[in-house]
Image (cartoon, rainbow, N blue to C red; front, side, top):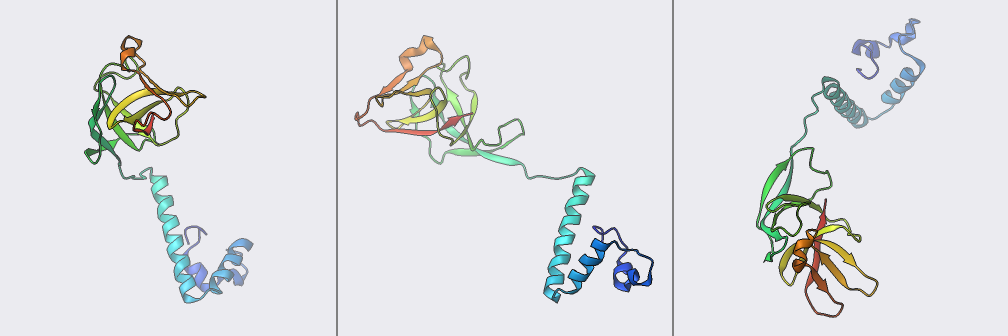
Length: 190
């Protein structure tokens, strides 16, 4: 009734037949279709209409309440210079604001200075599982140790994990094809 902007009694009394033209042609067509539905169909239409009207009321009132977004923050840090233990199920759920990218799937605390000044020691980075391209910063597990590094793979298949702080180039990692080193990309730092 709200969607049609008519009084409920208007529909039940069929007042459009008495010449007052209370309903438009499309409204009369909708009423005809509604009346042709089974009782279950009418019940379904009423529940859909109720849901739409309720949503409209919330939007108009400006009070669309959302559940707070929660992502895991892993307790084991990813090293930015020094190896740290691999993280597993050791995380705390944290509520994030709209400032955190919507695609963020989890967060990791960074340990070390090899990514400074772009990613300072003890900062929290947000990570998703998008594929990495050359130059992207990611979280990597190398031989069971976690690292935050800039990724590059050359045509020969050699993987380079660079420190952004070039004063810490000693923390760079080079992974040769066939070296049998354990290497997994955990995610892309956003």
